[in-house]
Image (tube, rainbow, N blue to C red; front, side, top):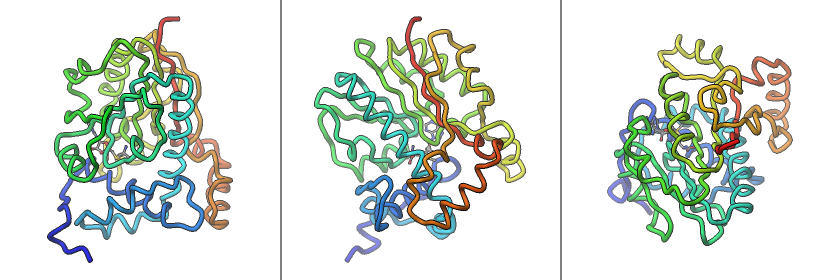
Length: 270
Ligand SMILES: C[S@@+](CC[C@H](N)C(=O)[O-])C[C@H]1O[C@@H](n2cnc3c(N)ncnc32)[C@H](O)[C@@H]1O
């Protein structure tokens, strides 16, 4: 039996603390009879954390938003790596996500996970070391880490649950910088809509958003929109009928359906 002494104390605040929610959602999914994502790392990592989990448990009803988002990103990652087995994957705002470990990666893939130093410090005590895998402790808004991204191979950049915690100008600057550094590849990320960002202000959050999905193309001409889908798209995957029906009802309204979307951009010269 695990005692508090064997556990990692987690006292993360603000955006850093949100990594517990997504981890908890994945653990719930993994322990369910019909997992959507099947992340076997999540419950093991969660069990090693000593945190104030009351608020996290209260958010359990939102789990499918996080799980469907993660599932779609796993699918996009798998597809990209099948076509580009020698690629680098750069995951920004990785939190305690296990994508690099739960996915069956082609042997040539190099994987880089980036998050704040405090998060990377915790992460490095929870995940094993592995060949072709490294972490960068940095804020994503600090431009210097970009120099560590190799330029001689295709790059898939993933940012899951990250961009809303930046400012609007920081989102723009990040995408422009990535477009300038990545020789060719793809960017896959989620973003909330401007109306949801406005609503969140009432709850004390200042979240960034993306309105027109083609806006990033105007920020950097090396970006081309390939896909934009609501996070709440693959509702047929939800095993619980009452949640499936509730989300089905909610997403009949376009505004709500498009409140959280996943974007896939090609990076490269036209
Ligand atoms: C909702 S969590 C998502 C974590 C992970 N992607 C997942 O899906 O479980 C948001 C993550 O973004 C990270 N984050 C927020 N702002 C950041 C910044 N400026 N630089 C680096 N990481 C950041 C937080 O530390 C946190 O790990």
